Image 1 (spheres, rainbow, N blue to C red):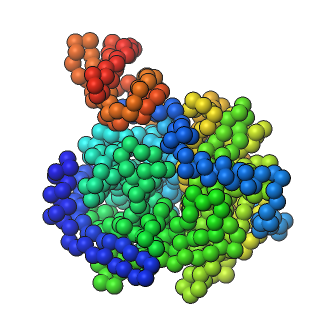
Image 2 (image 1 turned 135 degrees about the vertical axis):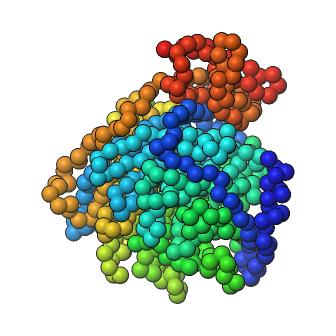
Image 3 (image 1 turned 45 degrees about the horizontal axis):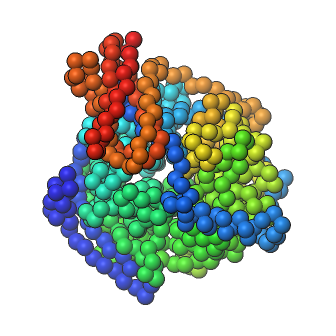
Amino acid sequence: MINSFKLIAIIFCIAISAHISAQVTFEKTEFHFPLKTVVNPKSISTDWNPSLQNLEMPSVESDMIEMKSAKYEADKIYSKNTFISEKKENARTNIDAPFIARNFIGNVFNGYVPNDNDLAISNGNKIVNVINSTIKFYDLDLDTAYTTISLFAFCNSLGLPNEHFDPKVMYDPEADRFIMACLNGFTDSTSYYVIGFSQTNDPMQSWNFYTLPGNPFDDTLWTDFPMMSISHEELFLTGNLLHNNQPWQTGFVETFIWQINKWDGYNGDTLSSGIYHNINFNNKPIRNLCPVKGGTGPYGPNQYFLSNRNFAVSSDTVFLVELTDTLNAASTTIDILLVHSDVNYHVPPDAHQASFQFLATNDGRILGAFYQNNKIQFVSNSRDTVSNLAAIFHGVMNNILSNPSVAGYTISNDTLEYGYANLSYAGVSVTDNTAIIGFDYTDLNVKAGAAAIVSDGNGSYSSFTKIRSGDNYINVLSGTLERWGDYSGSQLKYNQPGVVWVELTYGAANKRQATWIAELSNAPFAGIKNKDKMHKTINLYPNPSDDVVNYEFEVEKEMQLAFEIIDMKGKIVQLLFKERVKEGKNKFSFNSSFLPSGQYLLLVKGENNFLQSKKFLKY
């Protein structure tokens, strides 16, 4: 696989160029990627839905030491006996809290943590909803939710046997199409960026699929944490390159940007694309580039990105990164401007739950941003330095085209803790900077739920509207620290100004993560009272089987494993999955509903003669 990729890189590499200014350096490499396959969701008849979950949180002493050290230092500084003057949100009664219309359950827990939930909605009322590691389609006009499909099955014809994770989805209002992206594999030899473009405005029809190398320079690195946005002409994908066998906290090398002709993808043509890498500011790599989406639709030909000092105990630094033109424009370059906020953001504390459980807030990276009216609004995890609780940092970068400056606000509560916000534009004019901000919440005595607020973009905020109360606290992993994010979904309904759809996380009755989808507005919906939550179950068609086989096992060290179904004659019925498995306790599950009745073995094979099996009966 690596040798064939090297050949492709040599054939399709058009140019490598380096651009240097006083403080900014980067390189650009151009590629072409042929169409790999076409997938129609309606034609997927077999979905084994293999799921591998590590039940251990990384140890403080090794994997998470940098982040934990920052959190510990912040805890010491911002104890409840310490008062730091800080500008907070100014709640006013003349700003209405978000109004709720249609709202319903999203994709159900699939054995993966974290949720990594996202959604997109078309002007024609079609919804695509993704989590780790499934995709689901809704037709609001027909009041129908179609069968959930695992990303493994959706991308199966690509021939990638490893885990599909970190899904993202967007709707393009100019093309009236959808784009889905996810990652595959956790090592340099298995890592790919998978992209699907819908051929029509109906996501239940055919999709064009492409694979981009997750190790584009054949240098033992792999891709993590995808984000994306679109301009009038192009698709932009970002990601982080990590070392093998290291966690994201310590294995980071650099963040890159893919620039891709989106019309090639919609048409099923070979993708014209380029990757920008070695993006440095003052000889240090820019980390976690968050693409800035257009508020009311795509903009361009340039594209903005934001970054910050995500592990800093406290900082006012925001990096405004601009990719100045299209892929083929001779003058295209990357400009980076360091902008200071008038209020600091802070590394977030982990959030409290009941029963001595906590929800991980990770770091302070920027999680969502949009550009509208010469402003960029963005959100990240942060902390309230008075209560020392998890909070949201809402930044408003003004005067983008001339002399940018950032006004920062801390969105917090005296008792509740907030995390994993996202936001969308909800204004209706060039002087209206209204945004709806959705987020997750928790507390020692309040089960993990989902809520939203309205901001006028000038420092005033509504009270919050509870979208979905939690049914229980979250408890999936061993130990006391549970995954919570790593992101949430939010999108303006482009042909309905002021209407925003969100997908957020809450605690289900069985203590698993669950997702909830909601239609919100900053103005009342006709004929709907805001107090009427309208919790409803969309009709499910067809009704999927719940014939799931679960297998828990333990390994002493990280290793590559293969999971196979064997019949009683020793014949391989199905190779389900290949992936590197982390040290400690793990759980593997799959859907056995496609098997004929009988006895089978789940065979687990690995390195150094590792071999385990489990007999199961299919009725």
